[in-house]
Image (cartoon, rainbow, N blue to C red; front, side, top):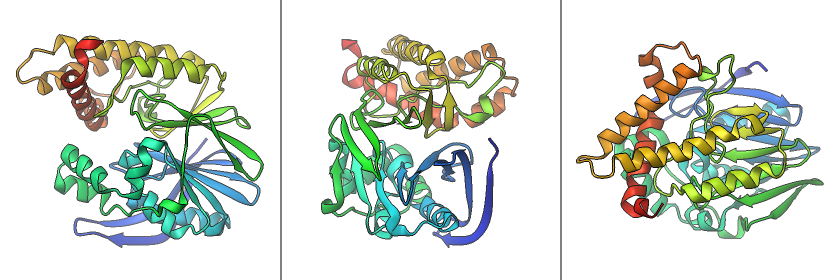
Length: 337
């Protein structure tokens, strides 16, 4: 699968930078398209367009700055805004759902499908913005996420566990999948035998793929890392015998049955690292250092030949957020695992 796209001339600005947006996409199948969200760097985050006849759905949204890219792709595909029936963020972390409000303004027939615990944050994003600002800082929040827009509650569908939504006859099953976050859903598409997994089935950046396959990284992002729930969730996903996973970070991976054990192991390794650092003062820098060492050692075993400095650059954001996530987990519940 090769990246393709065309420069459709969409530009907009905020106070920090000028965006020249390109409709970058990867056709996984004729009916499923992976869309580059242009978050932080190319190849870090994506979202998906799922088409079934005259109807379509968007799964995850990217940030508000992704909206122009998505609308350009719809135009290129000959899809009218009213043909988008659903916008489905897997969870409300802003690299997945930050653009939901702006998209809903532009897609008049769409319903927002979101976990019940996340719905209130889409209807009123005030606390969501405050929480993200606490993690990223005010300047970085504005740079990456801009302004969050509320979604009309009348257009929100709360995705209880095993909710099935109908996309022009194509059945999409929403599963409650805690572990990364309590408000996380995964979407099972029986037709393609794949799950849209958000962050639940980990991260697999294409730069780190080797002859041994994708390198799987577990995102213990603050603030709801739950190792027990995550093990259970992974086991549940595999009962469907999926043939592929559509990751937000990044794009589709095949043969998930060969990869899931590494995610189970990653959960337990995180717990071990967290407990080893539990009494350190300060704790966060040591967690960050231990995770950097872990990823580098694992990548060398994975036969990745990138320089250590390049690996550190590619994983800098994840290392920081994972360290924060483990730090929060230790503060809240770490001694009970």
